Image (cartoon, rainbow, N blue to C red; front, side, top):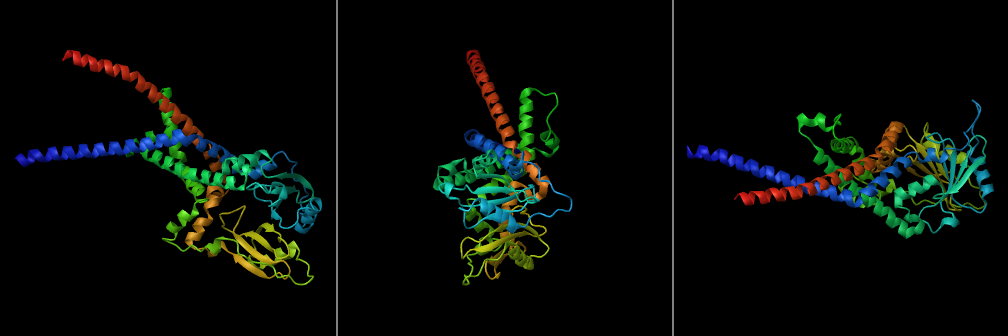
Length: 417
């Protein structure tokens, strides 16, 4: 009989201890969530807003330019002809040029000189030429970082530190990527703090109508956090990985092989043959077509000097990378010999995972719909930060009002004793 009386008491004590431990655990993560938001939450807002614009940077860069007009059966100018026009306009810029073809979010053909002397002291500031692919005329020129949209991109990528020098710019990039770790923690802890009981799930994902302003801010914070949590976790993880892949690769190698040479550009050179003339771009592309037939041509890099090579970028069906696909062929500029091939269809699971980090970060892995969703989700940190700070201030105000009242009640109790 005594044992029957003791057992309920022990069960009650265990429940009390479990409940108390859960309360402390929740309080700890609430503190972490709060202090991350108060200290660096503003940076999340900046990265989110700038990231929204960056999703459509090429479309925004071309916004306001005259539309590309051509007849129904008109054919675009050859890439060799366009390259001759660009080089004639800038004879001082010798060596490697990169060509980005239209048909994915942009109408113009972009010709980029990656390392101009004018911006050699900056981390990244190529010279860019926009060409009408049908008329072959140059319609715009600029250095990276001298237009509104590229400035916004630099804020997102390196907090504008790239303008202060290459070394400082690299520190800025690593700082931005490191913030991704804190965004991941903030999103994950927010999801944990939000997690409701099953019966209250519907209430937890909706905003109550006709509620007070305080309740509205609370509901807006938790619903925004819930609906954006998956995207924010993806953005945080992929952003962190861009500068700290060395910390991620050992984890990936735990389930799949990762060979660095499959992901990096090969060290190949053209064999100089007497007075031989370099191949035309058209012939280099034709050679690449023998490796990747019936695929979309996305980009070309011309040889950098006498020993440079052509690099032809193609996109195979199903590739997550639309603008910068990884199906590449490196070709000797004189003989046309294929020197190296990169085929994402032959990547291991681990290499494929690393390969899709970029299209996951900008949303293009899910096509146009994904880019639109990613653009919208870039505003989520602003909503979360604003509503979170408002709720924090409301709680502080309520706590300060309760303080004197609780002291009076405590004093009244002492007098009654």
